[in-house]
Image (cartoon, rainbow, N blue to C red):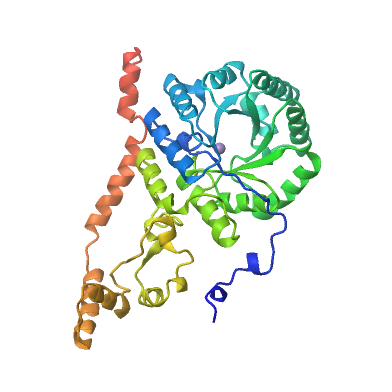
Length: 415
Ligand code: MN
């Protein structure tokens, strides 16, 4: 049997995808939405480091921050913008002149001007009418264009907004000079099929403009929804490394890229061999640990314990691993424990140049199971406790630190 025929993939085999765009360009959000992960901040040097890595790997567009946020943020955005990277560098702005001015001064190539557009956000958050939102949006797009910036127009909570208003808003902003429409599932409530219907409607209604989607992961759908949008011809998907971002985060860079490469046989132009290194760098700098069972970059993505799986993988990795771990700079590992079988043990001995008798093998496997099942859980419980305590008490500014700062302003902490 041919090797290729061992892989069955209905996406390719049955040509289930119709409208995949010719070119998909990743819009990386790690330095903007990713930095908005609760308790996370990046220094100027850290932003530069991540931006350079993303650029080296072939990311086409990155939003690197909101220059008006602080002096440090301004410095960071400006530093990245002036680093001479190949990627298009974007600075984000509210529909406020000073925000756009800060983007101009930060030397970015483009600005992403964002405004909320659902009635829910308009009524409770902005306390603005639709007319007012339309006016400030068009005015802001024009203002940015007049100051030499290309504009991506971004609407928060687009999927829960009235489609007629969304259409009116985008068409007005496109006419005012916005080159790209960024549609957001801000609270992660779409499904792939809903996304496909919705993008179809958008394409019927919008004046010609490049489409982009920004999907959140509140129900674990971010990557699937983003892929569904790409299947409908959306060219610019938003991602963050390790899927970090507000709440449960955004569509993860590594999952989307590997999804396109492996499942759609689509060349993203991203250097896959650096994926693991990038993921670990962002893990360290963000302080957000990667979940052990996180696809592609989690510890367990290429780990095996159970006898049947280890045996299969040792004979042919494709049996229980859909991705070749070397392509993303990883190695597989075997965990020895209760479910260990002879194959993994024999493999370990063989690699150490040791041959064991059948009796020794049986005893060794028995010994491993026996030890694993009687291992205390003290260390494991301690580890989880430290982790939880850190998240509960010390993420961001601690409670004590908060009241210390308050004290300095003359506020008396509660008794
Ligand atoms: Mn977001």
